[in-house]
Image (tube, rainbow, N blue to C red; front, side, top):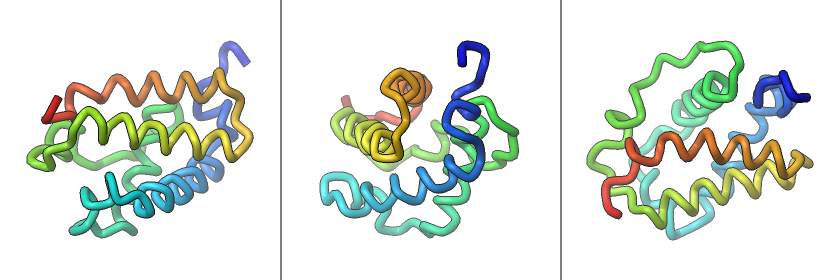
Length: 121
């Protein structure tokens, strides 16, 4: 597995797509972060997130959305909220049977976006 991308380690597109759906179920059920999505078209958001994570995890790059800074500007996302979102991603992957070391790799990728997403430390 050493030379495989996170995309490959997660099992490819179908598994990433399924993970994003489960991830947003968790996020939208969590009142501490669900308010960030109150005015969001979740169908479009889910599709964009599937494409973004596919690209970020080393799969095909079909992402055409905004960059992270522009896409999250003005939302007032806090450090705590960011941490909660990353935890929901990790929990989703764990429930899908993804090994801890691959979850850690995915979390490391998410961490690279922190500076562009968090507005309130």
